[in-house]
Length: 427
View 1 (cartoon, rainbow, N blue to C red):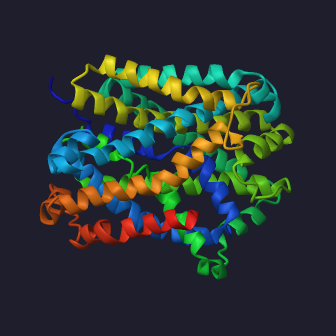
View 2: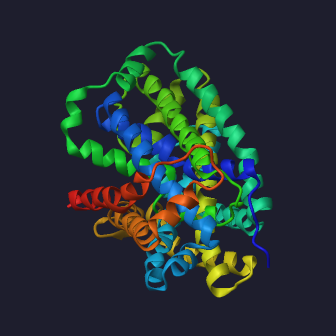
């Protein structure tokens, strides 16, 4: 069966959809809030431009050149490194298993914003989390089963414009609040003294990779459906620019609201699901803007979830020659089994692992501990085993924006070293 290919605009929107998700609207603002406000933006911009963008370029180039999933691509580069591909595929599955749970929460809070405020503690005791997880899993499976053009591309064509409209409306509303200048000042005025703290830089690199979905085989998988005529460097800069713009706009939504109502900007992960609902419940027209905010979160989460789901499906199609419907069904069953404990950990069942809710422990293991190693292994496998000049030529195929050769050395040496260093700093 002939491999599907993206349309030009479909590829851009699908890739932006993969990158834009909870990492931008939920994770980025609270990391900025915990790490000096505007000062964090400096290392973040550096990390995006000089680290995440080069890795995205080699993932797209490798996927397009070798026309296959992570495992298939690595096998075609060098059969000895094929087993390395199991790491990012496994990491994707486990991250997606609890990402779908959190996606369900965003949809629940969209409904709660319309019908009435509900405390997070009351919500998790209700048992809704399990049913929402199963519903979002089924929705994601249906979209992926429709294929690249009819499923993923069509979904992103409709949802991404809606996401941009909602985020602009919410940002305009936030900066019109009384006392908003204190929030904007916190967000845009850097305290340069914190830049001497290496942890700020490590968090910036981690957030850049997390936000742009690079280093985990997602963009390589999307690249395998890419037309040979596509301009990779130009596309990557558009995708990275759109992703960064949405993250920045998310800050303009969050910080004016938080400061206007006297809340702590360093509230951490609870910012979206505990702090903001309290604000929306007392804010003028808060019911409408709260619903818009959580619908925005939901759209971003869904477009990211389908990209992670596609990694497993493409792997089964390429490696085991499964039909798309069978591959989708198998991935759905696997995600259902490994995601069930995460869904139940925030319910009346209260499932724990290593003294934490199961979801939190899986997030630490796969979202923090294994992710840097997975990204480093993928970078090393492609940049070290694929001939450097061939890699460089593939990146620059059909582009007027010629990328210098040193990008290969960045991905070969510096980026894996930083990823490993980040991993060691965790301990």
